[in-house]
Image 1: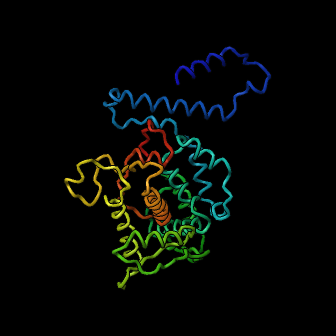
Image 2: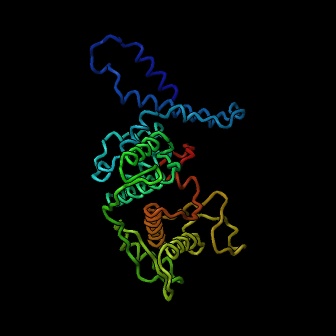
Image 3: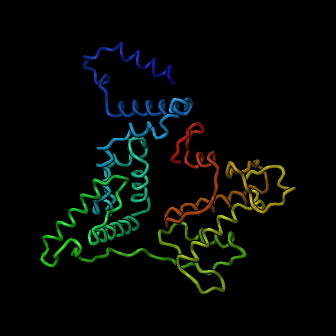
Length: 332
């Protein structure tokens, strides 16, 4: 990598800087690619030489690559309800957040993902939830949770609400903010057929096969039980995570001494990693079905903001995220 960069530097230094050839003009893409290489080199150096930084454990070279102006500009775009609801974000937002992630803090990228990745209906619901938070903060005089870790945009928006409140004749103080109530629509809820606790994975496969394309929120009720809503739904997701870790499924690599311990679940300090199978193995189709279920299951958890206990290994997470095995990104 160093030799390639040195070679490019030597070539560029030998060219005539006053040339009118358009090929010699440095573009924005060239600058971004240079920043990408510098970011990679800095991370590689820190990973290979950690000792010089023991004196200051809070030192993070990533902070030097964050662009405050781009971060604030992206947050302004995300806050515009019309842009979000109409899916009219500028092309550069997706280009930069996906191709040059080092320009933005993790919180901002996570917020962009949550705002834009689940369809218009989910975006509208998110905007309404955000608006409700802002109204409560204005009425109580409390602090608004910042967008993407930045307090600037949140403070500006909150101030505008309070200014509108003071100018309204029906409001005598900032604690009585007058904001007309409105709803563009509510999140659709699909109530699944009763799930058998004794056959969680079987029923989950049948349910997700039908529900995979739906953006509606899923609610679960168990067979011969009265409860429904968030409680049984959370338990359903937790039971899937537990059953997917069973030795009997044959989908996770484990130590050879499993037969002596007779444990039900795969427990590895390194985390879960798929066991390799040959292309002619008769169990391959069944194993692929389990991983297909797992993919839909993870997507539903992201969609409905459920946290699950699934100790996947870092190596497997990198494969899922299409990361290099040498990439030690802490945000994976």
